[in-house]
Length: 259
Length: 376
Ligand SMILES: Cc1cc2nc3c(=O)[nH]c(=O)nc-3n(C[C@H](O)[C@H](O)[C@H](O)COP(=O)(O)OP(=O)(O)OC[C@H]3O[C@@H](n4cnc5c(N)ncnc54)[C@H](O)[C@@H]3O)c2cc1C
Image (cartoon, rainbow over all chains, first blue to last red):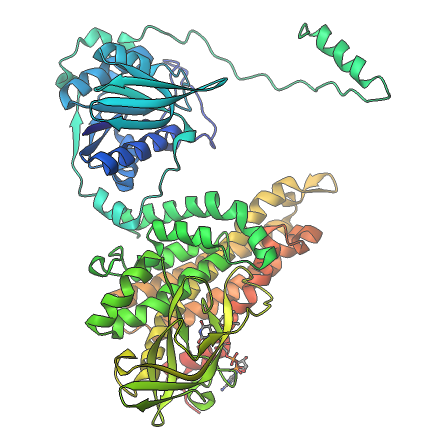
C-alpha cells in the first residue's frame, strides 16, 4: 500500500508566537519549529497501516527549509521517504492554497491513502483534509479514532459528540485522525541514524505544474486585515455561598445572557 | 560537538523523560515499586540496546549515546536511569566484551531489547571497595558444572520479574572468575528488596548461592581474569555514572530556575535576590563543568585512548556536583524541598549514592593518585 502522511512544522506551543507586521503572517523564523502534535499520531497510524498491510510510507511536508527537521523526525519514527515542498512562492499560503499545492504534489507522488492530523496547532482551521479530498476527487474520512483497511475498502470510527460513527469508503481516500487513535512511538536511535540516509525529494513551485496564481499568499482567499494582542483577562466575579449561592450564580449568568 | 544523531537522541530521551516518566515516577518512588511499564517503553525506544551492535539486536550506537540518554533520564529521575545504567553497562556490556559467540547469541538480543534485565554481582557483604580481600563467594568445578556458594550485597536489577542473568564474580582456585548465572537456577535466590534512602523505584537485593550449579560453559571471559574484567567494566561504568550524576545536577537547576521565579518573599520572587541567583549560578556551573568532564572521558574512551584517570575525575566531580546541587536545590525550595512530592526532595535522597556506587569518591581519588604516580 502506498501511504502518504502529511506533516506540518508548527511553532512550539510552549513558546510565544507572533505575527509579522509586514504581511501579517506567522513569523516562523522567530520560533522553534516542532512537528504538529496531531501529525505524530498520523505518522504512527501510517506506520501501523504499513506494518499490517505492507507498502511504503512517504512523508509530505510543505514548509520552509527548516521544516527539514520535522521531516527527519517522521523518518526517524520509521517512514521510508519524504517529499519536501519548499519555495518562497509558497510562503503565506492559507488553507486553500496549501491544499492546492499539496494536492498537486500528491498527484505527482501517487497514493492509496493519505493520512493527516485533524488540525494543526497554529492555524487550527481543520479544513485541510476536506479540501484535499475534494481537490483529489477521493472520499474523505475525518476525525478517525480507528482506521482499518480491508482490501480496497477503508473503515474508520469517526468521533462525534454522541460517540462514534462507522464510516466506510473505497481507496484511494484521505483520512484525518484525532489523538485518541494511538500512542505515537518515540524514535529509536537506530531510527534516528537511519533517517539521515533516507531519501528526501525537494520540490519547488515549478515542479508542481501548478497555476502560480493559486499558490502562496497570491493564491490565498483569506487575508489577515489586522491583528492585536489579546486583552488581559478581566478579574472574575466570585460568588460566595451564604445560602443563596445558587440564586446568585443564576443571576450572574442571566446578566451575561447565558440563561 | 555532538553529532546531529546524538543531539536528536538527547531531544527524544528528554521528551520521553518529561512526558512519560515525570508524571508518574513520584508514586512509584513513594511505594518503592519497580516501574515495569516505563521499562517496557524504554525498551521499545531501544535505550537498553544503545551501545550494542545491530547484529546482537542493539541500536548500533556507542557508549556516548548511552551516557547522553542516562543524563536526560536522570534529569527527571535517577531510579529509572540507574535501572538502564546497571542493565546496560554492568549487565550487557561484559557479555558483549568478554562473551563467547554462543553467550552473546543467547543473552544479548533480549538484554538489548529491554525484555530482559541483566545484573552484575561483584560486591559482597564483607567488601565492595576491597573486592579481592572481601570475596568469600566460591565456584568449584564438579565435572562439567560450576558449583557456586556465597552471597552478594547491594545488587541492582537483581530480583525484578524480568531479570534474566547475573554475572557473578567468584573465587576459582584462589583467582577471581566471572560466571553467568541465569535466574531460576536452583540454589540461586534473591532476598527481598532493601529499604533504601534513595533510588527507591530501582531494584536492589542481596543474592545468595547455595550449591548453585551452572554449566562449565557459563564461564564469562578467561578463567582467573574476572577481576581485570570487572575493573574494565567499572572504568566505563564510571563515565555512565558521571553522566547520570550530571543529569541529577542539571535537574536541580531546571527545578530551581522555575521555582525562584514563582516563589515570593518580601515582595519579590526569590530569584530577585542575588543570594539566590548566585546559588543557582553555582549550580549551573557545576553541572556544566561536570558534563565537560564526562564528555572528555567518553571521547577518549571512544577514540581508544587511555581514559582511566579521566573517568575517575568525571565520576568524582560529577557525583560531587550532584550532591552539592541537590543540597542547594533543596535549600532554595525551603520546606517544600523536604517534601517527597517535589522532585528536588527526591534528588536530595538520590544524590548520596552517586558518591558511593561503582567506586566511592575515595576510590576515585586513589585511582587519580595512582595515575599521577603516587603510591603508598
Ligand atoms: C543502591 C546500590 C546499588 C548497588 N549496585 C551494585 C551492583 O549492581 N553490583 C555490585 O557489585 N555492587 C553494587 N553496589 C555496591 C557498591 O558498589 C558498593 O557499596 C561500593 O563499592 C562501596 O563498597 P562497600 O559498601 O563495601 O564499602 P566499603 O568498601 O566497606 O567502604 C567503606 C568506606 O571506606 C572507604 N575506604 C575503603 N577503602 C579505603 C582506603 N583504602 N582508603 C580510604 N578509604 C577507604 C570507602 O571509600 C568508604 O567510604 C551498590 C550499592 C548500592 C548502595
